[in-house]
Image 1 (tube, rainbow, N blue to C red):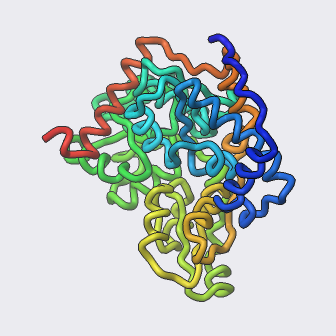
Image 2 (tube, one colour):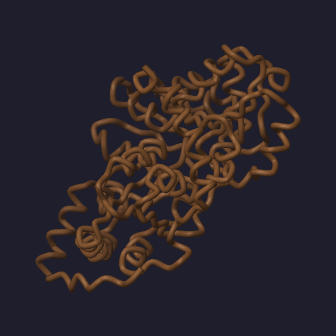
Length: 352
């Protein structure tokens, strides 16, 4: 892939206007100083012009850095939403600001597009907790049981499974699977699996088989602190991601994926909100709802924070082989089937 012609250098007026745009987008309210905004402005100015030349689109996960989300992203959301929007886009290139399994999912759904991952080292503890060989072993151990895999998995793992689920639709899809099967295998998130077992009234092991993977962010939240925060902040609404422990999930006001959490904040009125998930989501919520108060209780994901503006610019200018997401044709075709199965089960209009 050849390097593009230079987009040139911005004038002082260009930089001033770009810095003002970033300021108005809310970076200053999130703690960015004038120097940080000025440095970001030079990069965002170049990226936004270069992506037009390259016919590129930039999706950004909600956990990404604020300068990425507000500076260069064309759309923002969870991995499922982003992959669908990428597939619908007419862009030739997708610069995925997220982690590897997300970029792979985008490539599966957009095989004719060039998909770039600016930070090749951006992995995921859940995706790395299970291999295709381990999935095949589970299928031999539990013959006839459908394997539902959380979207936080590699393309190679998805290719071995029956249906993909997200935190938003997992309960609905597993309920449909249980209507036809006495046992279901759920991988790889152990904590989400235990939450699903309680929601569905299924026994772990005999009815719902779960794997041992965990998210390095969500497994570390302590449920014992919830009561303390409620005393400290009367009237607070506490929202937790479905990847958190069952003990924590039972003590909060809402549990779900990031999309559901954002919708909850938007449709409710509370004295304050606490978002128990990755810190980038809290930054995004404060930007979208500047009139609402948010109490910090979050943890940083080192994988999500691996993507910065310099990496995005380099991937657009002249991507390295490691930044180009490519999948074997057979893996891509086999992984697409459980994704399509998810669309059919979660979106009835697709199947009539």
